[in-house]
Image 1 (cartoon, each protein chain N blue to C red):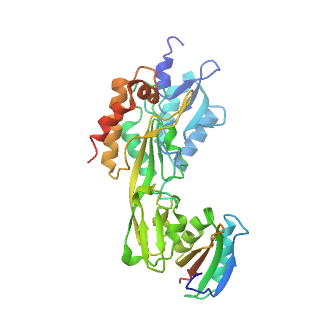
Image 2 (image 1 turned 60 degrees about the vertical axis):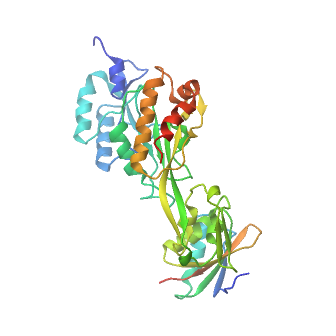
Length: 80
Length: 288
């Protein structure tokens, strides 16, 4: 469990790179600055690249929860 | 056409073809890069003096096949106009290969392009007992296959954690491939087992608050072979951080090969014959 609650949630475990980031990016664009997107993603390539791509686009990862089932839930605050 | 010195031609990048008096011309390239202007010149030469096509070599160079013996000097002049030269073949340092590195690739940890240019300036075509391959890869993803070279260089990153910046999100723990990092969110504590770190830089790249700071370095592999015999290059030294130190290591290694290598013997085979420790002992003296 995270200490945070997302304003919105997206599950990207059903897509593969490069659609993982695309799907997550579309979801964060729906939000306003400072709002939090909760993203469920697979371990391996997605956890390595999706949070990093958000960082590069000016958003901020706040928390990462290991769901212990091969997936992570990542909380990202929308930047400017 | 009397007394054609094929060895001399090969040294200068003209490889004798199956077809009589035809040569495949290898170009001197660095890190697999060529300007668009040079590429236009290559196109022109292939059309006028070759057979209208080029071959991409296994090690990031270009060859223009079907150059006629009588056109060799003209072709060299044409190449020179675009700042191009024939490449090296035979018993010497060959094309320096490199991935695109940190200036282009988000995974890159070192500037492979710049390093490849330095390697080319300092070591290219240096005479040795046998062919000698130098390759540079920017990170552990190893797109450029460092370990298959006589000397392969791989970018690495030593991470250091700055507690005051950390928000204990746990992303570094999630991305660390060796589980060297443990984040205890409730206690706001982080444990980093440095001995398990493989210098992949993933924690540094992922960290949202720059609590992980990375120091780029070079991991060097020796004696790789990927021809008649296949052998994986070995890491003999810890990661090094100074580029000058890296050049010293290469100079010492090339001098070692010159001293101990038999003509026609690949470096990995020389090391097997004389003992790897002989080289290692020379190199460790360099480290602080």
